[in-house]
Image (cartoon, rainbow, N blue to C red; front, top):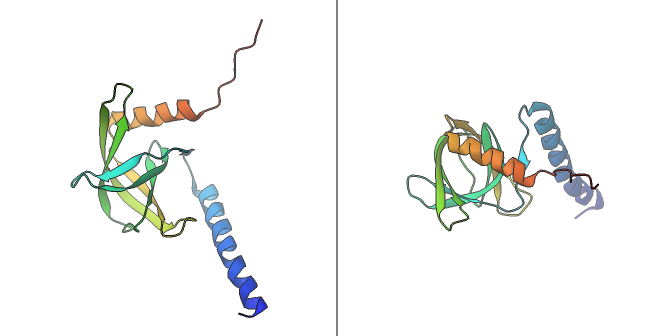
Length: 142
């Protein structure tokens, strides 16, 4: 491979990532929250796992999966939230696929969904995750 072709091949993914980040920055209306520990997302019709929750907002979520999702389609998704008592809370949502692109991890895809009529439990999940992953100032010592 020629040096210029090699350099171009290395630069092209970086430019795509920067363009994507700039687009996300300028178009985002709702703060998103990254999740360092992934929760599984299931197809609510078949109850089969389809990926992991990447981030959440009040109106949407990002799915990380090994297969690309069809943009422009509705999906019935299920979140299974582990409880402290060993039981699971199930949250079913209908979501519209807005975009899908290859993840930085090979053979993985990031997909953005807008939720349609999210149940109150989903809002509670978003708030709980926001509190859990936020940095809270420690009270001043006397």
